[in-house]
Structure formats: structure tokens, C-alpha cells
Amino acid sequence: MPELVFYIDVAAEEAAPAEEILRQIKTVSSVVAADVHMEEPERPLAGIDIASITLTLTALSGAVGATALLLDKVRDLVKSIRGLRQVLVQTPEGPKPLETVRASDLAPISND
Image (cartoon, rainbow, N blue to C red; front, side, top):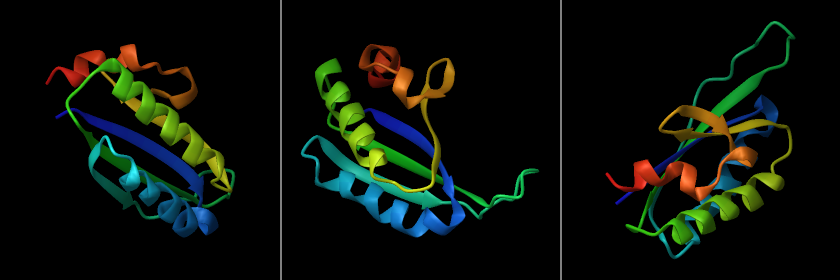
């Protein structure tokens, strides 16, 4: 079963609602398991508290089409997160912005 890993940075005061929004991914039929883990907020030089959330999805083994569907679902979910800073997806070449990743970019991960 392939695993998809997303790294979400959000304003610290919006972290709890963001975590709840991300948990909704468990209702997608191709998701076998979803783990949402929030890190301690950090204060970068700009003085804004940022919370990092890691979303790890275990999907049904599968086709590029199923992966594309999951990417689209995550894109839809993160649109409703207030205070969103960035969303990265782990690819074989390293983390990349969600908006630039296609299912075919993750194909080597799906073959594990």
C-alpha cells in the first residue's frame, strides 16, 4: 500500500482547526489509514508562530488515477484552512509544493 506524506505549515492559532479539517481525509474511500500529527509551534525570525502538521495517508494500492484523486482531495481540504502558509508533498526527489505535484510524480513511491 502506497504512502503519501504531506507537510502543512499553518499559523499556530489556526493549527487545531486545520488538524480537524485534515482528519476529514479519512472519509475518502481509497484511504486505508490517515495519520495527522502536529509539531510544536515555532517562531521564525518574522515573529509569527507557525505550526507544522504532517499528514500521512496510506492508500489502497494503486493506480495513478487513485493517487490523483487523493491529491485533488487534499488540495480541496487545504483550501478551507485559514492561516495556511504552505503545503509540501514528499516525492522521490524530496518535498515539493502541492500545487506543482502530479500523481505521476509520485509513481515511484506507489510501487513500494
